[in-house]
Length: 465
Image 1 (cartoon, rainbow, N blue to C red):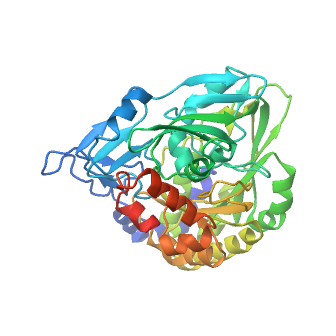
Image 2: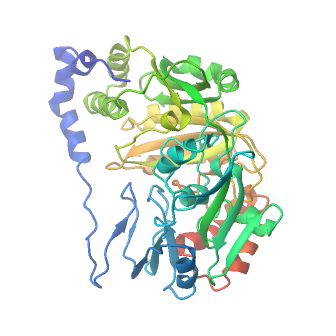
């Protein structure tokens, strides 16, 4: 979805307003952050997450080739041992000065059951690779997140999800797992085998050991029709509950300071394939940034220019297998806070966040994302026994994100929201005990499998107490 160029140029008078120093000020504020040193004084090499807001200098790095190597490594590795996937989390789950452990080499299909539509895969498999692997056996995951660069283990550890009425997060479709515990024991778990470990470690934060294999409950491979359309935000907010019911998958992105939102729907179809075109989301995002740079201190002009640019935008349609359409390329780096609210609270909180951003955070140009996720029964799942409406706010990786904690998080917390485990939040153990009925049970299981705290870094100490 590409904005019309005419609005970005505007009239000579509007352009003069931006060029007269305001845009230059923003360019200065948005300069590239100073990167951490690549090698520290002890000769340790830098690790950084995708957004660049978390980094560490681990003393050791390990990448076992198989489960047996992993089991031999864990009891003797320098602690804290922290598993790392693709680094797409924004919290400090990974940083360690001990051992950084990658399971990228534990990837691929182990086995599948065509009749039951299940597949067992190694946990280091990237979601982007899992789509074609499952398509090759006639299966697909019921849903995928917006970004598919994560490892399966990392996605499970943080409660990663997609969107859709009655559709669970990825961990909600796990039927069995194999974990290598901190002492090297290989543990199998399911609802019938070690159920307490299964319920606690399906969303594990990487604190219960290292997942090596996962069995997924899938469904038959289907073709879907994806439609991205531009709608008035106020109409979108009124119609959202009905829209979420009507489509297999639905989400929307509020474009602040424009009065517009992008509605994205996916529905099963038998229509001929119509492949998605070249990605335009990044261009659109940078167009929204240009409008912000020009008109940050003139919000009404910013709105008028945006609506002029969006006046002729037509819906985008693509038809293909779901794994090709549900996730998107996101090359523009950002930082994110996402909370999952009781479904009845979602629209009201979203309205309040829009008002606060447009009043007190005029530098924001990233969209606000709204999705819906079904309940499940994993003890540390943000969706534990509760259908949820998620709201995610974003900031460009170069820019300040403190406004999220000041303007958005208080609204999330007041509504009883639970944070996405991989995204920014300020909660601690006492807060989490009030939000998760089985938080103490999960913490007890964690202590039982890791009594020496071999896998707990400072951030996990904050969460578990």
